[in-house]
Amino acid sequence: MKLLASLIFFTRLPFWRITEVPARYYSRVVDLWSATGWLTGSITAGSLWLAWHVFPPLTAVIAAISVRLLVTGALHEDGLADFMDGMGGGTTKERILAIMKDSHIGTYGVIGLTIYFMLLVTAVSSLPMKAACIAILAADPWSKFCASQIINLLPYSRTREEAKNRTVYDRMKPGQWTVSFLFGALPLLLLPVSCLWATLFPVITASLLIMFMRNKIDGYTGDCCGAVFLLSELSFLLAVTAIYRLA
Image 1 (tube, rainbow, N blue to C red):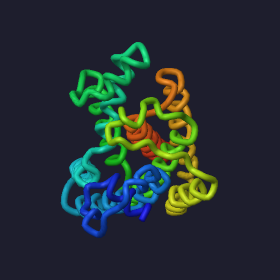
Image 2: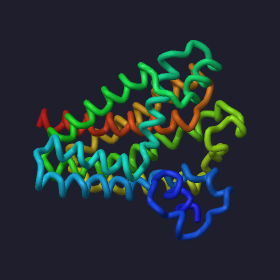
Image 3: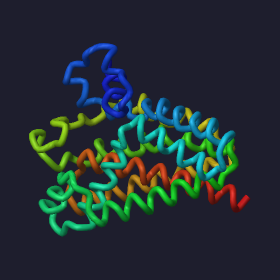
């Protein structure tokens, strides 16, 4: 039931048709966020593999990313835009949280998304097809695991009533952390040995962002989760690209 709640929450696929999930399970969806990465990563990599046989690499990557945006409803990208707007435009905790809650996108959000997509598309399209597909399969779950640690290391910055979806995530217990780690780490076995160094970059990126958020807003929000995931994943893919170019 918890996995179903995570799939309903983190994708726009009609899993909600299977059965109604009690509301209490949605406070635990981050536990299996890395597990949902198996689905979104597979769909993205599969779309890339198919598109690569029809279109030039750059077009194929844009097509694959577009498919992921449809599958997730741009949930994480919305978080990144709000995160950039809040952190770029706010000077106090209260002001940052107010900007992040505003549904309108601002200058920092537009610039942030533009640079993010430019780096993502150019990095992945520069890889060989097989390497690009494997990198995506590994990056998605592992980066979601790294980003999920935000709920274990920081308090929620708002009250439950102020949360956009009225949900505050519960911290993971040791057993739940282990399951989350296994779902995030197992796809890394697909990587060539030379690319295993890239797995460190999401860890570093997530750690630095968590420290940054502790300083800025003394906690996290749902938008922060999405931003940390995307930036951690981007750091992984950029590292893989650099490894291939330097080999």
